[in-house]
View (cartoon, one colour):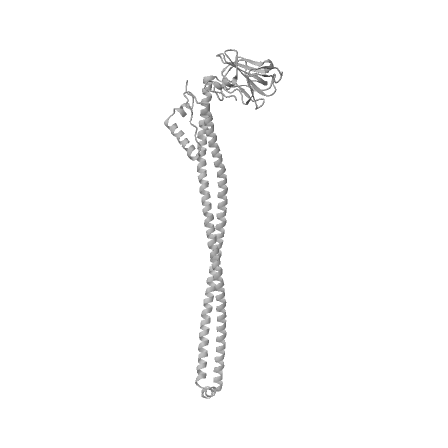
Length: 409
C-alpha cells in the first residue's frame, strides 16, 4: 500500500519533523502540563485510538489556552486597577510635596521676620539701657539744685535736657516694647509654622510610602500579565501544531480505512473491520421473549439499541454489499448487508425515508446507511440489529461484536 500524506511525516519522517514533535511534547508537558498521548504502533495507517488521542491532546491544549485567556483577562483587570492606584498615589505624593515646599517658604519668611524683630528689640533695649544709665549718672553725683545752679546753660537748658532725655527714654521704651511684642508674635508664628511643616513632612512621607507600594504592585501586575502573554503565545503555537497533527492523523486514518475496507468506511473501525451500528443502550437482548406488540412469546432475532431517539445515524457494521433495502413486514424499513464470507447484518425499523443505500451498493464499515425510526412492529425509536453467520444462522450480536472489538452494551 502506498503511504498517504502526513504518515511518513509524522511517523517515519525526517529528523527535523521529529525535533518539532519533540519540542511540542516538551511545551505541552512542561509549559501547560498536558501529557501528549503516545501513538499506538501502526504498520499501515493510524488507528482509531491514535485519532482519539490526537483529539484529546488538541482539546487539552485548547482548554489550557482558554484558561490562559481567562487568566489574562483577570490579569489585565489587575494591571488596570494597580496602575490607577499608582497614579492616584503619585498624584497625592506630588500634591503633598507641593504643599510641603510652599509651607517651607512660608516658614522661612516667618523665621526671617522673627530674626529682624529680635534685632530691633535688641537694639532698642541697648539704647534704652544707655539712656537710663546716663540719667542715673547725672542724678547720682549732685542734687537737682546744684545741677540747676551750676549748669552754664541756665535753668531752661537744664530742664530742656531733662525733658528731652525723658522723651528719648519714653520713645526707647515704646520701641523696646513694640520690638518685644513683634518678637513674641514672630516666634509664635514661627513655632506654629514649624509644627505645620512637621505635619506636612509626615504627610509627604506617608504619601511617598503609599506611592512606592502602589507602584510596586503595578509593576508586579504588569510582570505577571507579560508572563501570561508569553505563555499564551506558546499555547497558541502548540494548539496550532496539535490541530495540524490531529487533522493529518484523521486524514491518514480515513484514507487508510477507505483503502482497506472500502470507500464508505468511516468513524471507529476495529482491527478486524467492524463498527458500532448505532448509538444508545441495549433495550432488549437476543433470545426468546414476549413480543411487546403481539403479546406472543417468540424469538427476538437481534438486539435493540435505543435511547437517543428517532433520526440518529445507523452505520454499516462491516464492509459488504447491500442485498436488501426496503420494507420487510414487521421489521418495517429494513437493510441487509452481506459480508461476502457468509456473515451478514441487518438493520430494522428504519424511519420513513431513512434508507440511504440501495441494493447492490458496496459499503464500508462505519458508513452511514440509514436513520433510526420506529416503523413496523415497534413500540418506540430504536435500531433492531441482527447478525447471521454461515449464511443464515442467527447469533447473539453482543458477544459476536465483542469478539470483533466492538462493545454494544
